[in-house]
Length: 515
Image (tube, rainbow, N blue to C red; front, side):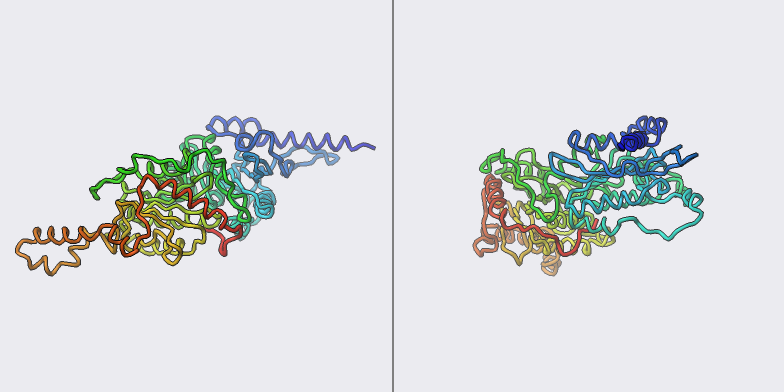
């Protein structure tokens, strides 16, 4: 009367599923420098925490007396597990089974992974390798028909962008639907050398007369510089580490708040070198990343998207243990001016902060939008206006540190001026409608053209204007609320994080964040 025989059969089928695409395919995967999907899941999650779902789903062939003769597991493995003790959902493509193509897929598994993350309000990690259950012309012959395309679970994919943190790791050659699943995330990573991404791969693109290798067409550096993915890492192990760290700053869903980490760094810590961080010569640059690292909790700055939109620095950090979003300017690139790419980067980053209730600390040195013909061709003003809209629509606490420049429309985007001005200015602050150096020619053209000594008059005008550009004159008119000693910045930012911690309310934003 026992069911032991059925349990034995269950274990046999589970063992067959763990063979994945077979010994030869597994060997080829490892020889290509890649882990198998099951090895990836084991390395990503806390040891022993993975609970697989649908392990024996696949395509079977039966013989005499309905005995199982052959079994090909589905090329998608998923389930629940834990990262740093916190429950998560993880799903990964098994490239050893038909290269991840649709004819080996069991669509319900991908759909349930997205559904589980959304309904249980758990972070989701996608391990993408291959077409991710996307198309293969071989499917037409196997099915005996074609079909009108529909992306499985895409309504859930979109909904999850506004509900739970989604991390996607590109761990091989990723094309079509796999590429779309990779970039439709809050944080996307590729592995240098072993990961490429395409809308369509080299064999298809060759029909356009473009004979390219996988790396030439869709290498990780191409997509990091284009902003399609956020970061590039050297190994799968580093990808897993970055995924774990990214999630450590975020709540499990929009219905919770980011957890406070143990405060191991003195909030009153002062860095003496900050008093001379910004050169007196406005034409000289300085290291804004060093400034950021000095004012946030030690070793807490996690930069995101360094290769794209380089004049803007974006990342996550902690202030007295509280998770915050850090936005800053990089004067080494266009003087910190906003390009079309930087504006796109800022829009997406501010939306991330707003979605997951992260206060924003903005270290400002913005000379305005980058100008010139190429800037106009890139639609800089439209992308810049979108970034400005994102900042004005954000409802999270916001603190600006005016480190140096804040000019024009882009400079005005350092904060939402209609809200409480929670901001501080360094004595190096320099602001206005446009920089004095660039505005003299426009404002005083008639006088300069009529002057017997144009250069001499221009120097006199610049000297007069420099006398009134002092931040102290602006403070006299309450145009800026406080000028501070740069060495006090950390203490004031930590106070900001503590004062506003209780103001954040867990809830969904009105519109789900788009990729």
